[in-house]
Each structure stands twice: as structure tokens, then as C-alpha cells.
Image (cartoon, rainbow, N blue to C red):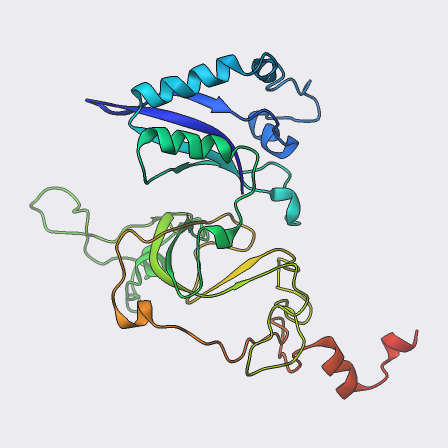
Length: 305
């Protein structure tokens, strides 16, 4: 992610109120697209006037930073994703606020200001064998009935007017349908937070053989034979988490530090990966690399053409 701004919040009786926002001098087109509905038809004038505040020795910018130091109780940086680095068919970056903690408020503001226009790699925040929380939106299934949505039993075959139903939705009194009664409705596409996922490995995209372990010396990358189904190839840094992650392929997820200090044995133990399976995930994968497949299969018709 790239830090491109800072927001200062004041605590009020009704909660936090944003006092002011300070932006960096140079913003990428991918984050400017976030402020437009139709980028190619626009005049692309976003932040052209704001940049002029940096021209005169950034007096206005420094004044805003001093205001944050004087009045605010909470500081958050504005950071955006580098969507151009992955091929998902989207050019518009995701923009989010990340709270700055630790030290007094002046130190937080100075830290946030010096992070402007700098990249924050994943290994600067997370480390191997740590726990993290995964926040995302689940895979959507549309409008579903009670049998699929709640796992209710089907009624007998001869039931009049359908059998994938709830037989009784409640007593006469209370004269309303209780919240706990299964009903048909939206299934999936829900916001969910899954806590305490262990980080097994932080891989570097720059390394050629980033799936090799001490016990498996095969020279191979994290990409399976044929790539990841419905995604493609992973070329940047990656995280290997225990368990599953919410949502379909290509949907953005948020990773955060766990809310509580983890002291359980499985949370603090050091994990040594012995083998990472890179066989094809589309069909019956038998080969770890394309070279291994070519060696086993020999000359084939496609190779001879």
C-alpha cells in the first residue's frame, strides 16, 4: 500500500469528528480514479489546485499539521492499494484509513507526514508465525430459501404447496414471527471478520523460487501448474495463512493485527513448512512443475507443432 494522506479526528460527545485532512503532494492516477465515476471522459483536474499549497514552502500544509497536533486526539493515515501491480481487470485503487498508534500525538503526526508517498510492504506490518484477522465480504448466493440458507430439513414428499419450507413459523402468541425462525432471504455477500489466522509464510515476489522449503529443494514458485484457477499468477509478495479466507477470487480483503495478545501454544509456536503443493489446482494435479510434467510425458503433439 501507499500512504497518500492523513486525517485528524477530534473526540466529541457524539463520537469522533474529522477536523482536517492533509494530502501528499504527488498522487498516482490509480488513486485519483477513486474520485471519478468516469475517468476517461473527465478533465482529470482532481488535486490540481491542492498541489499549489506545496509551492510556497508548504506553509498551508504545515499550518494544517499544527492544527492536528493542537486539537486532535486521533490520527489516521490514508493509504491506497497498488491495483496496477495485479491483473484483475481493475485500475481504480482502494482507499482506506489506518489508525496510527503509539507515542504522543505530535510523534504520530510527524510519523504519518514522513510516510507520505512511501510504500508500506506487507512484511513491515506482519511477521511469520504471527496471528492476524481477515476482514472481507463473503461469496454472494443471492435470494435463497430456508433449506439452503439455514439448513432446515425438507418436508415429506407429498407435502402440499412445496416441501423446502419451514412447517410451522411459530405459535399464535406472541402474535409475530420471532427473529429466530428461519426465513428465506439474502444468502452470502455479508461482511465478516475471521479472527486469529496464523501466518505460515511471507513470500517475496522478487524471489524466483519462493515456494522452496528446507525439506523440499525443488526449484518452484508459489504458482501451481497452470496458475491459480480464476486468478492467474502471483507475481508480488504473498502471505500463506492457515485456513480459508472469505470471499471469491480477486475480491479485496483487509488484514489487521489481532485485537488481543495471543498466548495459546498454537498461536506462539514456530511453524516449519516442509512442503508446499504446487500441482495443478484444475483437475487431477500430479506434477509439481512444468519441467517435471514434460520429463514424464515426453514429446507431445503440442510441443512438436
